Image (cartoon, rainbow, N blue to C red; front, top):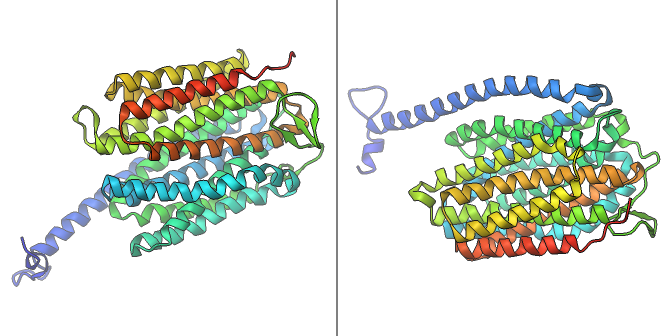
Length: 455
């Protein structure tokens, strides 16, 4: 049908011609999809919110203010998912694989370059400005709210400022993770361990993401700018939540700086966290880099060569669900690290991830791809909670906030570097997964070389 079929009016109908009817059908389908997504999201939101509030306020967390941070984390995760959906539709699915690879590489490099420079100073910066943690957290959400509104306009206009705005949004997201990690120890109720608190924070993020994902997909049917506009509202609400956190978040009474080095001697003015923490942190760094690698490598490989004859979007969705499920299971099992050896647990997770990566390199297929995504999500989440348990067990309370901020900064950078490797490698599954397996084995060797001090 030519262009005239879309624009020529029907003389027998005041409503317009066949083109108008087609447009209406498309618009009607989009509206129905959006309404269906909104309805399902509303039901899930009511159920999830009720459960989240009950869990968040348990064991004195409501009185200490930890519940507010948990709810803030859920809103932040929901907004992050909306941004991911919008950018995936704009930078990834809407163009050919080769062009998408270049776009995402540019996006990641823009993030990696300044973050690699800023990472060494984020921890010391937070150490020196502990009295403004609420405002630091609020600033990271307020900046993202503004940038989401800018990106919404850039998506419609196909403007070049989409990339710097997306870059700023991702850096602010990583800064939020670091500042939030430093705030957790200050809000712990009596009798609640750090690993329990961080398990609740992680579960809140899972619930927020699960609620926002269908909403974002439904809104993307209407236009890629709509998820960004709703994300703007979510980040604005999160900013208010951050400012309303208890004043004790800003308290720095009795806190000292931490140094992520082996040994128990002081390193200048900083307290060295010791070998067990360093070993667990190195293992977690390898796991986080593996997660970043898989995020980008599998996304591009599955677009180029979908497994089992599946549509590329379906294959990517299955992998995303597997990673989400693994992360959820890891969060659920996180509390068990209190009764076991968390430093050995994280080493076992690293060994398991290396074995599954090697298996995927040899037997590339739908089953192994889903298995490696499941293992990566599980290992990253349970590994992080194991690190939390090690920190609580072996690091004195007066340096825990600093230790969390510095370790989270390192883990954020590791994810970005792993993602860069996933983009840089050729899209050859056995090669990419083989290199990942070797890198994980190398990380295991480096971690095991650290000699923990006797306790």
